[in-house]
Length: 479
Image 1 (tube, rainbow, N blue to C red):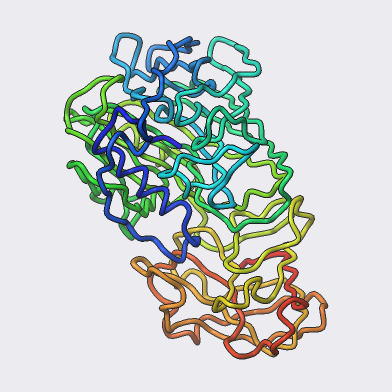
Image 2: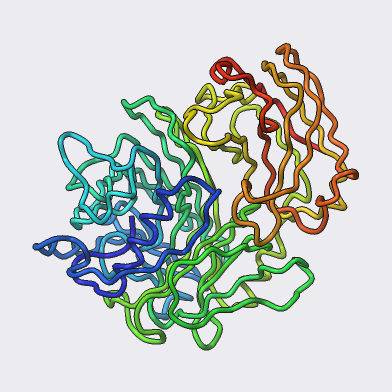
């Protein structure tokens, strides 16, 4: 994880906030917790050694100069708007930078007898591309320059809260310059001995730390994306906060409106923060902004997690225009579970595991019967209800229940369980595949903007004692 060492003061609270947030009970809860100030970074009585001196490999053109550091897991530690501009990336400690950081259970996580640093125990299993809290760098296994504008690096990441402990996974990254854009493909092969399927966690995919001059967080979070509607900005120091980015991008820029943004297609959930004094500081100084795209994802023990993103460098207008030049995000459901979960995940239930073969085979019941309810959730979306008058669900139910429930969220909704909306639809529990058509025109609350949907049991319909035998085999959700 990415938030500094014993040398920092105010920044430390950020780590505690995200330790609680990222270790939470899924996207049912999106709460910003207050950030306490902890002595010596919460690290303990000792201070870790300084980070290793950089060993950078660069790509550059007339628009961007980018450098990956072989002494920091091959993460991006240098990013400049052209060959003569200053480095924007913050390198105060091993754990900021621009990189990949992944999460799963258990919480807390220990390995080979090593226990996590106490304040970071809430992070659980957390392989980090750059290194660990003790400033040990993740090892670069191999790297190569494919051409004048492409780099490849393979990394054995360390578990952030542990002392020099390699994670049971390998990360690969491909970096490519495309004008004023750094296009990145990330691939992580997981090979854990613990075969438990833990609930989905938010992933930092990627996270980016820029220096103090880049303090203006800008995105578009309104309900009219892509007609150049007014942007939303926060330009003061702020704790970590959720951003609903309806144009799939967010950026930090300086007072002149230049900086860097993250674009991820069809990704609507970002988190931002700024810590320390705004407006000044270089790559070795404490003040920093933080920006991350945070999809929920189930990290199976044998999973391959892949994603792509773009770092757009330049003016705010250039950053936004890049997003406008990309294909528009989906305006309705078209999920076909051929070989992955399409971002779907679960609360208090689990599926048959990885790999996915043409369906999600999910327990239609609670894995923990002491908890209330269970659900099968879509990723975050931006749909206009009027454009999705019906849902088609291709599924086979094995259950004694005569109905199931579709529920949904709108902007500002916090928890599904607090909603009074939703619509029950009849199902046949004989284990045979059918296409269920849900007429949403009769649902009075299906209106405005929809940000997420979920399937759950109609309350009181599952016979006691049959939770373990119930099943939904879900092939597709479309309109």
